[in-house]
Length: 245
Image (cartoon, rainbow, N blue to C red; front, side):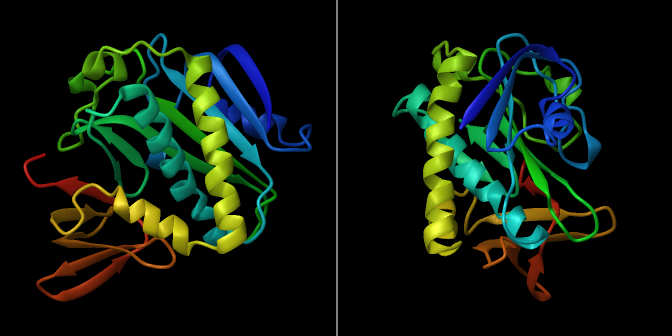
């Protein structure tokens, strides 16, 4: 996959969207400094000095439901790359729908943004942010959200942006090929093996509703399966909160 490395940009996802008409093949767009990063639901994503900010621009096959499954591919690639840099004693887990945790704190996030019209997806930007060198101040995150952490503070390992991309890009390519060849089932199985709080009590919240129950996994679409007092709930999109945090 091609790479574009920028000194400074507002958002790597925004840059991917601007370049979508010019790039013919899959391309990683990485920034040394990102000034206006964003997360899910329009939230700000703080990118401190030395942290990782990159987007992969793809032209995926399938409609929005199929394309959304690429967030699980990205999560598996992130898990592998972080395991490589953090070492065997770090506790790394994937939090549904789009975060990766290190020692119980949020170290990375994923944001998918499609480019197209109607139900078509002409191109997709997969934005990935990782706190390699520093984490945002805890006061900067919303109440109840996971406390942010950094690779450096948690493990003492200093990792450059380039070295992290050298690990992330081939891992993403591996898991993407797995899904293209065998479908979503092996991705789902691998993701569940790394899932945070599987089998434990969690709370899923949307703008209108909140459900608490046992996290029983994800279904064939990637939706959350929650066993509540009122029965099983299948939740395609929500924010997840753990007990005590």
